[in-house]
Image (cartoon, rainbow, N blue to C red):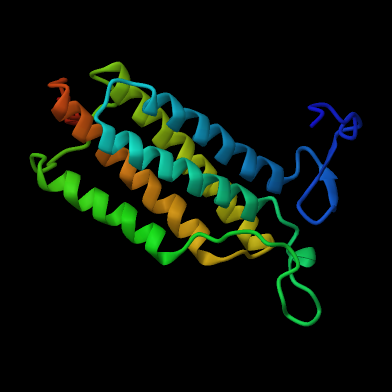
Length: 191
């Protein structure tokens, strides 16, 4: 497969289904941010963390390709007039969302109760989780704006929302496992 096609040299790109749009289109920004998130998650996976977390992150990266495919699909070309799907694109399922929730609950059970916001940081691996969480929230905001214009399956937004929660709890869990300081944010009182 040839890497460069030259078809985007004038600032447009093709969606699944063939529709060409400007590279600054919100749909491109949405799935491009999901791709950025996927890369950050790969960076977390490359750290010295336990195999269970690595396996979970691989599964998440797989699901993010599905999210990206959903966002990269022109909804007008995804369904035939008969109502059948034209493109064979996988979907994020409620089971995918439930898996994230189960992981969150399992990690949270071993952590001290959170009584304050925490400052991102404490260890490089934890910081990578917080960066990924922020990119995930940006992806969710962009996808939400896109959904207002051209709706897509609701599980896609639900997955991004739950994933940012997962990444926050993973940061806390890794802070705990790595014995890193978790610094609480305590607002300064006016004197």
